[in-house]
Length: 95
Image (cartoon, rainbow, N blue to C red; front, side, top):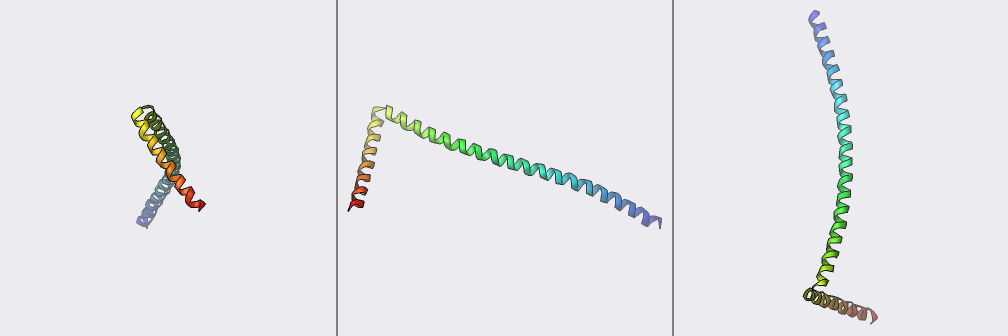
């Protein structure tokens, strides 16, 4: 009988330890989920900032290319080609 009582007490202690551990793990899980949410938000903001910086870089690159006379001529030829393409499309719609 004493052995059964002893085992019951050990099982009760283990059960209490498991409940405590479970509570700690639930809290840690909650904190980690919050951290994930925060990091995802930060990532989204950084991606938006990266996109804006890429757009600014492309605009700056185009502006710089217009400064050099040789590059400017190439860009102007491309613009003229685009204008001709647009005119051809507009004529097609007009027919």
